[in-house]
Image (cartoon, rainbow, N blue to C red; front, side, top):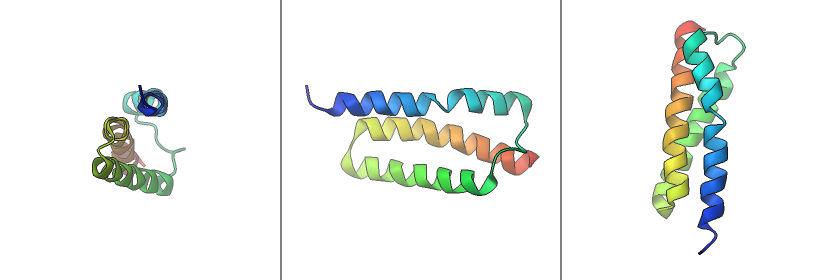
Length: 83
């Protein structure tokens, strides 16, 4: 076993931490307290982490960033739509 298991644990914890916020935002459509600038930068950053994971062929990075990108993009879209 190599250290990749640590990557999977880290990826799971950081990715799953977005789920409660995404669920709440989708249900309530309340986005006034969310910073647009932060979510734009964060979502673009996650997209680049995904690209980096693909270059390295690092499955923890690839899988976690696909999920995180989907969640952060959803929140960002709701922020843009509902302000």
